[in-house]
Every structure is written in C-alpha cells, then in structure tokens.
Length: 446
Ligand code: HEM
Image 1 (spheres, rainbow, N blue to C red):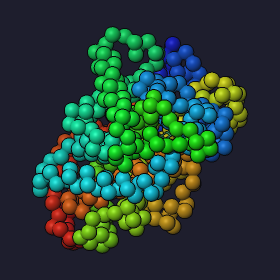
Image 2: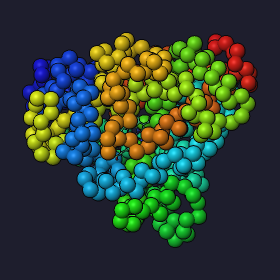
Image 3: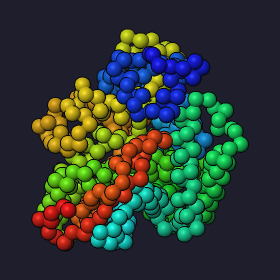
Image 4: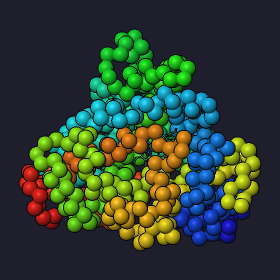
C-alpha cells in the first residue's frame, strides 16, 4: 500500500490520522498489506472475512500485540487473556451479565442517572462528555462495589482511571515499545495511577474476604463465581484482573456512545422530539424499568444508529496462531491483522448515505436489507463484548431518564469531533439542557 515512510511504514498515519487511515484502507481491497514499523500488517476490510476471523476460524487467532499493552493494567482479565484460560474465565463471568442480573442493575442505573439529572437547571450549559463519563464511571463502580467505595476510594478510582485509559491508548498506537519506558511525566503519572488503583481494589477484595458477602454486587458475584464445568472459582488475583477489566471496558465505551447519542439528538431536534414522544407515551409518569426497554422501539433504533456511527472501537487486532488462509491471502503465524468496526459501519458499499444519522434505517423493513455482518458494534464470536446487555441497558436507561425531563440543544462552539485514544472519545461537547413540562408530549424543541 502506498504512503508509508522508511522504518515507520504507515505507523504515523495510524497514530496521527487514525480514522481517516482506517477508512482509506477499504478502497485498497478486502485485505490490504501495509507496513507498521518494521513489520508487515494486514487490514481485513470485508464483513465476511471479518466474520471468518472472529467466529468461524476464531480458534486460529489470538488477540495480538495491541492487547498485550492492555495487560499492563488489566493483566490476565477477560479482555486480554487467551486460549483455555480465557474460555474458563468467560464461562464464569458471562452468566453475571445475563438478563436476571442486568434487571437488578437497571434499578441502580436509573437511580444514578436521576441523581445526576436532578442537579441540572433549566437553560444550563452542561459539558455532556464529562457528565456522561462521570455517570458511566459511577454506574460501573456502584454495580461492582455497591456502597463499599467510600469518598476517598471513589475519588482515587475516578482520578486513576482516565490516566490509565489515556496511557493505554497512547501505548496501543506507539510505533515502538521503548516510548513506554522513557522517564516522561506521562509515564510517571501512568505508573502512579496504576499503583493507586491496585491498592484500592486489592484493599476492597481483602476486606470482602474477611467480612464475607455482605452485599449483592458484581464483586461479590465474581468472588462467588464458579466454572460450571469444573466447579472451580477465581483467586483474588484473577478477581482483581476482572474488576479492572470491567472498569476499563465498561466506562469510556458507554460514556462515548452516550455522548455521541446526546450530540446527534441535539443536532436533530425532530428525532429527539420523536424519541421524547415515545417515552411519554410508553412511560407516562412512572419510572423506567428494565421491562420497558424492549418496548421502546425508537429508542433502540437511535442507539443502534449511534453505535453504527460511533462504535466505541476504531481498530482491533488479531494475530494468527498458525498460518491461516483468508480471502486469498496467506497470513503468517504471529503476523498483525487489523480490522476496523468504525470503517466497516461507514462503508458506502454496505450503507446508503453512511455519514447520515438516520435511526429509521433500523426500522424492521429497512433493517432487514442490511447485511448481518456489516453491523458488529460489540464485536462477534467468543471474544465479542461480555458486557453488551449491560451497556445496552445502561444507555437506554440513561437516555430515557435525561430526555424525559430535558431537551438537549447545541451550545455555541466548534462541532464535536472524535479524539482517538484507546477508543474514539468526543472532544469537548457542551450542550444546553431545557427543562420539559412534566408529562407533556407536545413540547417543542427550542
Ligand atoms: C457501548 C458500549 C460498548 C461497546 C460498543 C463495546 C464493544 C466491545 C467490543 C467491540 C469488544 C470486542 C473486542 C475484540 O473483539 O477484540 C468488547 C469486548 C469486551 N467488552 Fe465491551 N463494549 C461496550 C461496553 C462494555 C461494558 C459496559 C462492559 C462491562 C461492564 C464491557 C466488557 C467487555 C469485556 C469484558 C470484553 C472482552 C470479552 C472477551 O474477550 O471475552 N463492554 N466490547
């Protein structure tokens, strides 16, 4: 592929223009070979080939170098572990994210969202990106730790996590590993945040072992979790890895998706009004429950379309365990294979007017025409998102709580754009919140 530099190959494009770069790969074929530093890398661009890699031939691939960086923080958690160990962990953890548990978490999600929205005033400008990061972090920590996080520990987690996420994002696209080891301010802050996070979470796990299961939260469920096949549970170290993995995988992802949903709704007042009408009609004056989520069809369409345009990951990686034949190419064992859900879901060959925010493309008759494997915001196969149902419930509950009470409109300032770290997060996103008269579906958006 043209455009590479000596020694670095295409690493600079990947580092500095990542979204343009991953989208440009599509025009070069279903599989493209390019250079990443000293190595050849392969980009897989066709939905059938991505499926083959993630589902049909999943056993022939491991996650690869990009995820090795994640091990610095998430060690051997579900996101970064491999092979039989991963399968065993997945068997223990997946049941904790099933319907019955999410049903219970949905009430916590609603209470936290309501408490945030209750602090807003009519006409206030809200930095929605920050607000939703806080909301997502509070939700995931409350579901994990219930009330165990006192103010000091909660503050420590909230302070450390953004530093860790930023550091991981930088490391994932760094052309050479040496950059992580230089004595820079950023590397120092990363190391400090990591030890702070470690001491807080290890402390909570140790307390739990002494006191026993005094609360019904996700941490208690992880500590009690057993592999159905062998009856084995997890050691404290493994529980620690899964707690950190949940914090990392479950905060920015949902916060980013929710921020983009709010942003898009603020710029499409007629869509926002339709959504509010649906909420008024279905919920009336009562609080939203888990059982309502399936009935809120237009809300589901808005979420589906937001996750198509802003799917939380811009590039993912795999590495073949043996030589693998894929789409007429022979991929060597250990090679770097990339795929981009972001580029896939904006491919004009798969979606008419791919840049347009059009929730009606998910109305049943039109959705049936979309190729199944062209839409994978949560990945696919055995490495697909373990928290998908959690994330969907959280997004729906938060949007419903916000939009029943407030209408969002853009504040002045430049349009938000994605800033690529580990995932594409929105830049500063100030929105004005306008209080709606309670229970009225005829409210005009300003
Ligand atoms: C809108 C929100 C989210 C999106 C779009 C999303 C997307 C994804 C994707 C694409 C993957 C697969 C990565 C790969 O194939 O390499 C993944 C994996 C994962 N996600 Fe999510 N995620 C979201 C929220 C969450 C939440 C809330 C949690 C936990 C509470 C979570 C936990 C995980 C875990 C543990 C994995 C690794 C699964 C495994 O390898 O077995 N995610 N996610």
